[in-house]
Image (cartoon, rainbow, N blue to C red; front, side, top):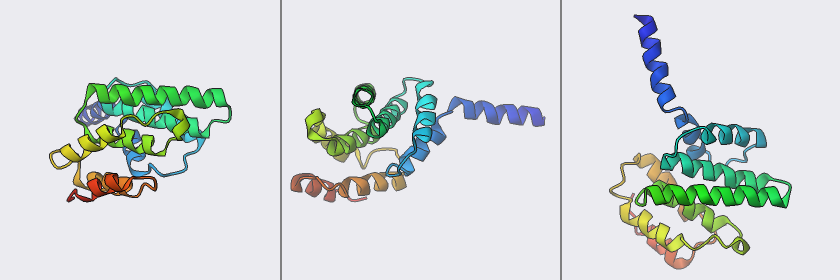
Length: 167
């Protein structure tokens, strides 16, 4: 009987093997991750499915690896892969506010010369439109909203739009 319980629990956990990785990234987005931590998360997320949230967080890790990389070619390689994964995630689930939040967050922080800023208005509009109806946990929705509002390079229009959301 106990064996059956362990099989059930570990079988369930292996069905969602990256949930703890994604949860850790969600909560600690601003953390200064070590290369070792990022490589671990990269490997874990790379092994998994093409589920949109998995792809998006793989892209997040790749952006973070790009930021930490010493060599320009490696920086650019991780940047392009991160961009590809986040864009693919959004193509697969166009109304998910978490995916739109992630892309808006990174497009707001990435240097202008990299040319990855084309979707900010669209992402913000989708985020605002589906914020209330999203099934995402209220606490995490409020954390996303707070992080977006704290971005230093938001336009007045973007900030005003975010301030209209009632958490």
